[in-house]
Amino acid sequence: MIEHIQEHRRCALWSFMGSGKTATTLTAGDAIELADGDFYPALALGPLRVARKVWSEETQKWEHTKQIDVSKIIGTADERKAGLARDAQIYSMNYENVQWFVDLLKERKRGLPFKSIISDESRKLKAFRLKQGGAMTRALSEIAWHKSIRHFIELTGTPSPNGLKDLWGQLWFLDRGQRLGLTYDDFDQRWFGYKRVRDAVNAHKTHVQSIIQPGADAEIHALVRDLCMAVRAKDWFDIREPIYIPVRVDLPPVARKHYREMERDFFTRIEGHEIEAFAAAAKSQKLLQLAGGAAYLDPGVESDEDPRARAYKVVHDVKIEALESIVEEAEGMPLLVAYQFKSEAARILKAFPGSRVLKTEKDEDDFKAGLIPMLLAHPKSAGHGIDGFQLVTNVIVFLGHWWDLELRQQIIERIGPARQMQAGLDREVRVYDIIAEDTIDEDVLLRHSSKISVQELLMDAAKRRGRDG
Image 1 (cartoon, one colour):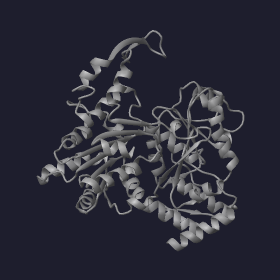
Image 2: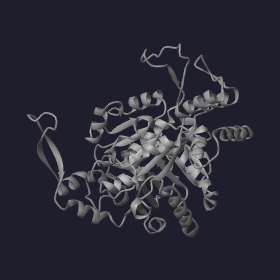
Image 3: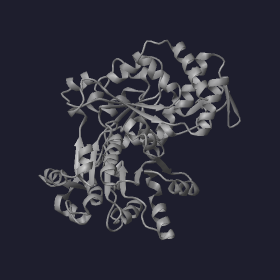
Image 4: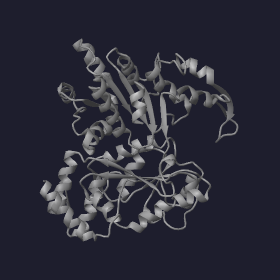
């Protein structure tokens, strides 16, 4: 992957989450800068979570990239301008701010201050069209081919989640239409067509469906192969074992304040509600709730949304944001999502229409039939006795965590490598752990990989975080 970036000024890496795309790009970019001096400053675009966290943290993970300074162009307009004004090698910006940035350049009548553009989660570029199309991609197109831009690198695990039609917009930023057609209409007319099909629900109705012409997929793959490098997990990993992918998130300052108060004092106050733990076990639960994004109130407090449900207060949504990234990374694959508290399930249901909680045999059957894009399951409800999920998905996400390793292993096994192989499926099993950093989430996962007692873990963690402030 490093060599691919070094050999192609404009290129794409198609590789799954956790495969090292960010570290690879940093390594290649730094080598190019040392050799030719034409890589920095670089603009790294991505979803907000990536812009806020990934690039700045990844540079510090590796000895050879620690000298790379990252400035974040996120937040309020003043904060974004301050980020731009800093002297750095990489400037990380979320896609939503591209239009603002281009408008700012026009307002200041200044040249583009970057030599490279890195498009992380580059499927965001699929909506580009020379006419109409997405506003963000139109704004990006105004600077993508500026004379100062020496490199344009696209990173994604899912270049075409909805089919090969997603590729044209992404490839335009690499070759201006040389390979797939100068316009989207050229691309569409050459390789795609339409047919009328019966509606899946109402047999008396029909609708027009886009289809790809015979042999078109092989032609498209051949045309883009030189610029686009694909890395598949099963080519590099032993797929007889699950691939564990940590997805780390930072608690926002207010949520961190509540977490620290509960950890230190067994007490915090959220929007006027007192939340208290009377023993270490209760505190452990409260900390897991806060790490997950919401804390339950006293049993006597009535829920605003459902009088039958216990009331809770949301303190952050960073895990929901991380789940959104995983959904996009999954390339349309249905997801099995493990939650620990009902408040987590309720918030996921709200954020992802069409998702459903596993409660009945019908829920189980509908998931197996491909009718549910995201099935939420508590590890206690998805253990023994459930079979067939491996035919539907190879991806499980833990949004919430708990101390019981056996329950965790049981729900993973619903789609585990052995079941995949028994079903004749040659694919890896991906286990995404969404982890709130510097919280009890880390302690739970450490407990799963060690023989340390829960009590020892909590005592050590409390001491460590006390020293760290």
